[in-house]
Image (tube, rainbow, N blue to C red; front, side, top):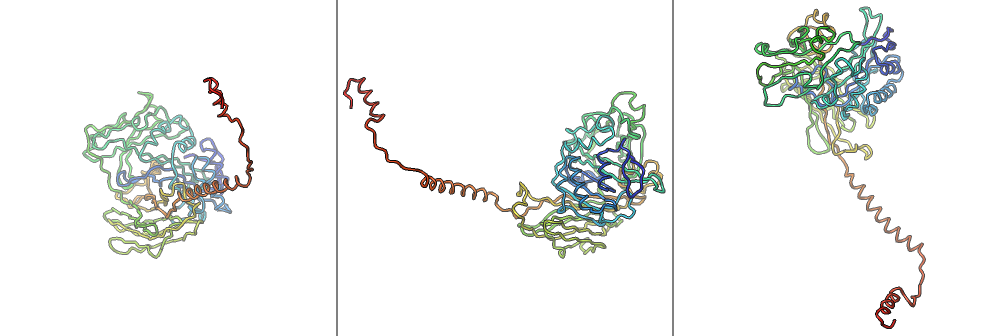
Length: 529
């Protein structure tokens, strides 16, 4: 948490740049930003294999911003903001325009001060084809107070991070109150990095890991500017496995918390503790099992979803979304957000929602039809998910014909469709105590938590890859080659006939061949011709 200068909630300019990066502070003040959330992700989070994600983001680039009430032209500010962020983070955010931007009404609520916030001040866009690479990581690390010179950022080695199964880096900016009366406001900048390493070969029972094994580096010191610098290692295990876990070196303390409805145990390493680096100058946290273990089984997430395209041919198709509620006895609502490009023309009358063989009518629905080459489809629904059920949502669409200049350089690869967004308050089996939230507010803010009976979760489905009717782009090349050949032959012949002058030359008496023959005959002593 990095504070800025105190100011009213409407203006809230950033005035202190000791910890807050000046590039983002000037951007927030100039563009009238109330909240900013940017994520660059490579890969897809496998919910069934990796469990519930703490902070999930869609594949590619995601940007959603709340603007202040004082912004007169939100669309212009949104365009300028995306262009500036494109230069800061070396990403293709400048491709965000009206064709991939929507204004949700219920899916994305402000995380900070929300007094008098209107949904017309919100803009949301996803670029599913954005490729994340080292060029995006370097500016992200420069926003840290100590850069990559000290603290946890020392572990951020690009060669290791980008050889992972999932990589997501994000920047979140929002205003927060300094006191209960909210007379003074500060800015909070949160930078998150989520990485999944699948370093365990299949078929082997040894599941040991360490910081050096994952990052090829160890920790040497905490960031001198940090007021808190801790490492949390999840050592939660079943009752029979608790005695099998061995963590070295010994943690500074042990913390127990309710995370996503489950009781978890964490070994805490406080990098600011003087006793942590007394024995050695580097910290290499290792987790070992005293004897080989079988494959680790994670509990099935209460809420997860998947989406796919069905149909045949290149004229019509169907988008199907499956939403799973695995809670044994609790039902809860979920908000579904669908953003579909304009060249997939949805038939809203074909929308069907089936749960346990019966029709499930949404209690809230908001649909904004697309306009060709101007804006995409926007569909938001509030659906009730019964306990231990699977809800199937289907809608049919028709593929449109694009102009030949609108196709991508690789049109036969297909066109990407943004993933669906699911937002829900998932019921918790184990309630969280208010004392836990007061004692560790920073820890609870890093994990999905709302109150003692539920926790907030936002999930993203897979991006879709849809083929469109594509012309044969080799035909223009063939026509150009044939036309150029015919023109060259015909034009060249006519030009020669019209411009060339013909002269009749008399044959010379002594040609070159005759003179060569006479020379040879002279050497042989034969009379000349």
